[in-house]
Image (spheres, helix red, strand yellow):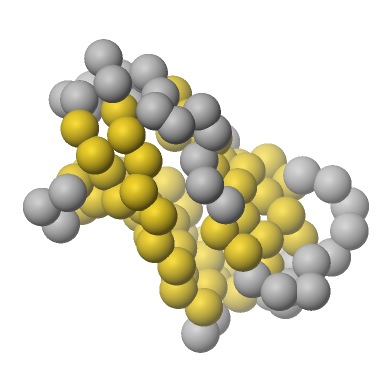
Length: 98
């Protein structure tokens, strides 16, 4: 798993994008944007709510980022990814197909 900065502009609002590709096998990319420095957490949950991966838990400066997620060890199914950054929180679904 790696977190990379995407572009050089400072976003004006928080954003969590749909992962790409979706459905995926075995890896996908999740993009997000934060307009100011914040503690950012990005977690993956099973459809039953069980935490299956913690991708990020650190302070990030304002910018656009992408995180690669490798789900090789997970079974086929629908997963939820959730971001928290300051007062912003967002959730999206993704599908792993093996």
